Image (cartoon, rainbow, N blue to C red; front, side, top):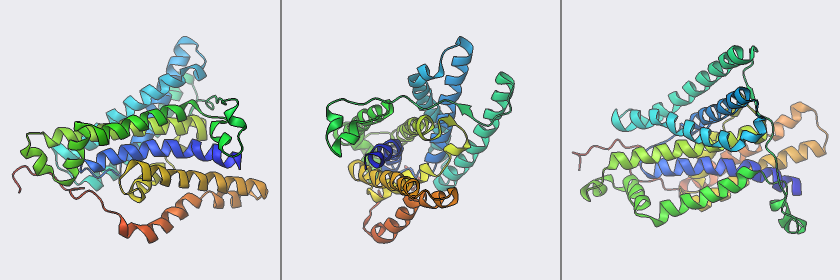
Length: 319
C-alpha cells in the first residue's frame, strides 16, 4: 500500500503541474494540445544544461538538480512562444498548432540529443543520462500508518510542485490578473472594453503553460526515466489535458483526477510485480491510467463545461 502511494504521488504531481499550465492557457481562451511538446522540450533544455555544465566543470550531475529544473522551466516557456505567436498573432488554428508543435518537439529534441552526445561525448546516444533524484523522509510523521507514506521517500520536486501549485491557484483565483485571464476565456470583448489587452493576457497564459509544463517534464526525467530521451513523450501531456478536462478546468478537481491517474499507474505496476508476471503482461497493467481516461470520458464528459471562448480566434472588431 505504501509503495502505491509513494509512486503514485511521484507521478501524479508532475502531471498536475502540467495540467495547471493547461488550465491557465485554456482559461484564457487558447486551446493547448501542445503540453506534450512543452514538457518534452523543457525537459530537453534542462537535461542538456545539467549535462553540459557537469561536463564543463567536472561537477556531479546530481548536484545540478535545481539548475536543471530552472532551465527546464525556461526552455518550456521559450518553446511555448511558438504556440502563442501562431495562435494569437497569426490567428492559426490552435489545434493544428498544438499537434505540429508536439511533432516538432519530438523530432527536434531527438535529433539534437544525438548530435550533442556525438560532438561532446563521442557517443551516438539518443538520451542524456541524469540519474534518479535523491529522496528524503520526514521522520516521525512517516511512521503513521497509510498517511505516513505521503512523507516517505519524497522527491524534492514534489515539495516544489506543491508550493508552485498553491501560488498558481492564488494567482488564478485571487488576483486581478487571474480574474482578467478567466474573463478572457469567457467574454474577451468585455475584457477589451475594460481597457485590458486580451492578446497580452492570452500570450502570458500560454507562456505560463510552457513554464509549468517544462517543470513537469523535468520531474518525469529525474524520477520515472532517470534520463532524458524520447521516452519522455509517453502521452503524459495528453493525460494532463484529460485531467484538466475531467477537473472541469478547475485546479483542485484536476488534482483529484491526477491523483487517480497516479494511483492507477502505481497500482498497476504493484499488481504486476506482486504476481511476478512476464514483462509483456506488466506492460498491459501500465495502460490503466489510459483506460481510466476512456471510462471517465464516457461517464463524465457531458457534465463538463469548457470556457465559452475556448479556441475562438479573438477579433477585436467582432461583437
